[in-house]
Structure formats: structure tokens, C-alpha cells
Image (cartoon, one colour):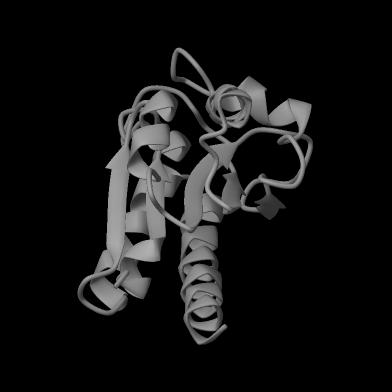
Length: 157
């Protein structure tokens, strides 16, 4: 019998030494404090590691930062199993490979979870440091609430 709680994994992605690039990690850490015990929450600093992190999961929720033309602190949500991530998503990565690369590799290999939800916070400062910009810090609060609500809905579905 499968454990439904482990059928859903939450993965925080980012680099905590690159200011706003740590937004996904911050959301994941805060979710660990608020979600029921037993929920699988993983932190990754390498986008390619997420493929192993969502192995055997029915649903994966990935939390990251991005840089596009939206105002800092904007929250983006994508259903990445249905469509490739937008092109501008790849520009923000301070990792060697970006999340879109990992998603498309997993898609090509048939390793995507059945449902892949990506929440990304629009960053402002990706320079060296460990502080979130004010708009991103506020957005982490909203993202934690949105993800927690969506996870509750998924459990009930």
C-alpha cells in the first residue's frame, strides 16, 4: 500500500549564497515547520538532483526563484508536466544547469512525475549574499500559504 503523503514531494531549489536565489529554499524550510509530519520536503542546490528527489512521486512541487520582466516578488505558478517552462526561466539560474534543463531532461527520459507544479518567485538581487530582497521576503510568506493550500487540496483530491 502506498503512502499518499509520500506520493507528493516538495523540493526547494536554490543557492542560499546568492540572495534571492535562496527564495525556494526559504519557502521549503518554512513549509517544513507548518506541514504535517511525514511530508517529504527536500532541498536541492543542483537542479539536476531534483530528478532523483521526485523519483516515485505522483506529484512534485518545486520551489525556485526566477528573473523575467515581472516586478520583484511576483509569484509564478507553472504546470511543468503539461508544457515546458517559459524560456525566460532559464536566465535566472546561478546553477550550472537550470530547472528548465532538468525538467526537459526528465521529460525526454520519461522521468517526470505525473504532475509537476513549479512555484517561482521573481527575484531582484542574485548577487553574492544570503539576504532576500524585501519584495522577495514578502512573497515567500504568500508562497508558503499558496503551496500549503494547494497541498491540502491535493491530499483531499
